[in-house]
Image 1 (tube, rainbow, N blue to C red):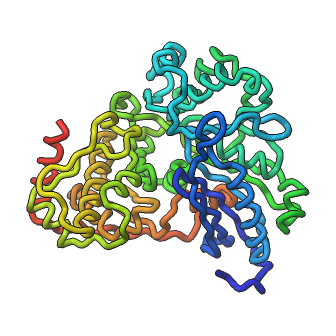
Image 2 (image 1 turned 60 degrees about the vertical axis):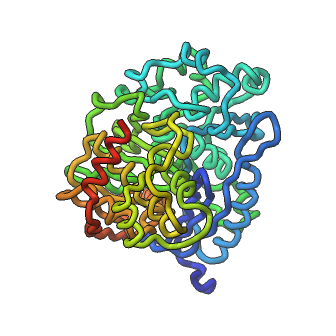
Image 3 (image 1 turned 180 degrees about the horizontal axis):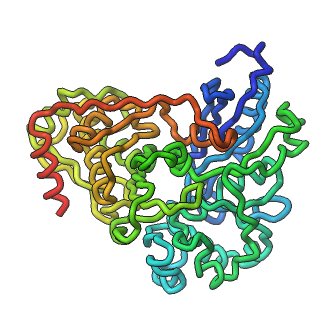
Length: 457
């Protein structure tokens, strides 16, 4: 934590709402971390359906902003959130709780299939539960017609938090283009579903992710001690925040954004190789570019395989698993991914201790990441962002699985935070370093990879 006497330090606060945790991060004008606070992000089971604890997050946010306002001159706030989530609001606030996308809407999938556009239009694969945002909305329109009809705005989740902070409603393409069925990435416009359902008037004007929507509301400034002119930035979908600083490369590298979801993205890649049944999709970057992506719920699967007890993964444990022929085969999360619907299983001798369990989880996520990158036709360079940068064996293992190609690792455990900072300082790059991962030498790894791939088939 910085010295409170340096209260004139100009800083940006990034509100990073992931599926598992909520963070508020304070960064100075060159992107150096000044402070970070976090809370769990657990859905609430009460009410008409499982929903996000927006009020709990809001009260925590106010308290944390008060703390940060005593540390620095907070010049801007940037919301960054997970996808597949939206809020229906009127002038007073939410007209319905914000659904948790892991909840199965009471609209049969077959009924929604009759409404939704084809994959060739949206590049949005048919996903379980509420991962296609359009299914959530179609269900709410049928199940809660009075409340739905009372809504003035349909806000993507980053823009909902921007609206709460400054009162300005906006739309933004990265959140709209994240397997929602609402966006046509080839044309960079709303999909036919929006017109079919009559939702055009609910969608506010589109703004750039980096646009300043306005200053914080006066009441918010008074309650938190924030400067009256603290800017509220439009905001962005989290994996697109991780992608942001890599878009200027020639060619740009593939980016592996890691967290609850592991998302492989190949800027400049071809869309015609995407396959709906493999959970391949086109996201839309902050610059309006269609980006081929593939993902799996790697963070949650890692936790399922590794167990809840903390501990280290050792290279010797990885070597024992490779030599013994112990394989983890997808999937362990039950939500999306190229092998959705398959029950996860372990073949071969079971891990004998916590170190081997963590080693097997690391092997699994690295193999799945390599699989996704190859399926997308990723080139020679890959950059690893996010929480798996803290696992010392993940990137070296991925590099060993991809011989002759470079795997870089950022020194920023949250690429989303870096991307959020960039939105408040558009045109500038933060001081974030990357190093090339040296391949982890394991005897028999190439044969192990071939055997794992054969088991998938």
